[in-house]
Amino acid sequence: MIRLYDTTLRDGEQREGVSLTVEDKLNIARRLDALGVAYIEGGFPVSNPKDAAFFARSAELKLKHAQLVAFGLACKKGAVAAKDTGLNTLASCSAPIIALLGKAWDIQVEQVLLTDRDENLRMVEESVRFLVSKGKQVFLDAEHFFDGYLSDAAYALAVLEAAIAGGAAAVVLCETNGGALPSDVFDITLAVAQTLRERGHGDVEIGIHTHDDSGCAVANSLEAVRAGATQVQGTINGYGERVGNANLLTVLANLELKMGYEVVGRDRLRLLTSTSQFVAETLNITPDPHQPYVGQSAFAHKGGLHVSAHDRLLHAYEHVDPVSVGNFAHIVVSELAGKVSLRTKASEFGITLPTQPHALDSLLDMLKQREAKGYSYEVADASLALLLRAQLGEPVKCFNLESFRVIADKREDGKVMTEATIKIHVGDERFVATGEGNGPVNALDVALRLAIRRFYPQIDELHLTDYKVRVIDESTGTSAVTRVLIETSDGHETWGTVGVSENIIEASWDALVDAVTYGLLRWNKDES
Ligand SMILES: [Zn+2]
Image (cartoon, rainbow, N blue to C red; front, side, top):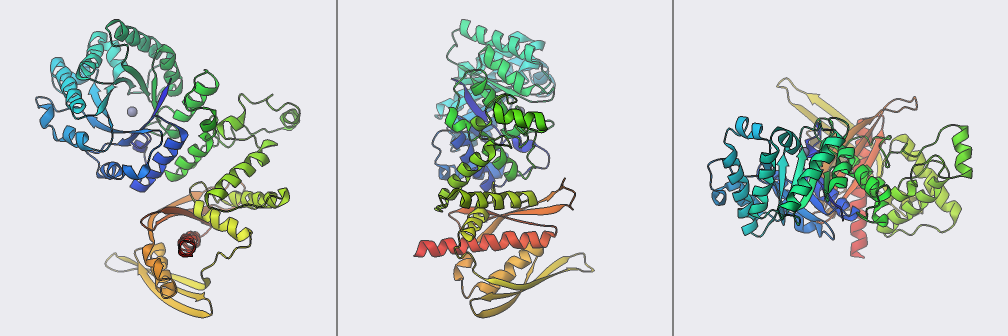
């Protein structure tokens, strides 16, 4: 039994330029739970208020499968664990499991921690014991374990044993610098597993945590599993600082499809591709089309030979069946896979799609055309729902725009003010409203609210909670377009919408209209 441990929400967020809101973190955690990971590391509640807020709201997640983990540090040198503020914060946080960082490299203990080896052992053991006494399960993250083992194997092992003496349920061998090679990771993990067994600690789980600086993070993880590790840590799409962490999706697919392990099961494995896309979009990172298993080009075939071979013998040029990881070859199977996933998505919104094949074909064609223009519905589920309803002939408009105008004013004192004027029709009435804001989207939002509030007082319940912009460089030869993703909440539910245009204000407006329309229509449905 191999258990996956996802650290996208902590280590993954260390990637340059990435910042997640609490809502983003909750959404990603739900996807990880659905995928079947065993552990979700939510963050570092002691030092990061946003992570603390995530744990405070974790009950909303209603996790079915995964357990939440909070990350933290051992007590300070010379300090009593029970009096350490950080450890007390961890003890009272909602996560049942704590991943506690302890140093396993003698040189780091002496030169970075500036303390002696015995004091480091005491800090680890006492900190683990304290958290265990508070009812937590504790995993030791043995930092720099592989460098430590090569420097002084006995000491690196002593750090693991200190944690075990304190009651740790798992010891995680961290390849913190990311430079190790698979053969070393295999040898050292095997030696650790043997030593722990010989010393009567065979029941303690061994974990592996790798970074990809040598390009071997996935290989290192798999080698550690071969050597006896049963917990694998990593991040979705391999996001992480420097060149990233082990890509948990690649690790998972290899374990399931190549190495014969049942990790999440074949049904959940089909969520691999959609999970990858969802997390990429939420982090506002363009998905890598060439990523193993889940990339858009991972099973794409070019050239006449492959295409005709594909027709005759489906798997001749594929190392696995793309459907097994929820991806599809771009020829033949794509139609089928597209229909299945579209039906699934539609039913989540209570939309029944027509059963006639040609009707479904035209819906898919329309979606494909929009995706080619830069639209993405991975996180913009509300825009997709509106689009489908519109295609099925349902009314999806709350108002009609006559025109809007946005003026940005930069003044002498350096302040920039934006003013938006909207002319809009609701039913037979025409409304003109002007709003001011700190930017064009904010100003348009204010003006739109003023314009339609009399008809739709429930607009006051809706709040824009996130706004993301990405310039999509079109390889098709046309000019670059801007994609805007907006997240909206009514305090109970959140939904995402998308707008695409060469003009950022127009893209923002489209996403805003979808956001408001979805919120208002949904509301009416609830009332009826
Ligand atoms: Zn790490």
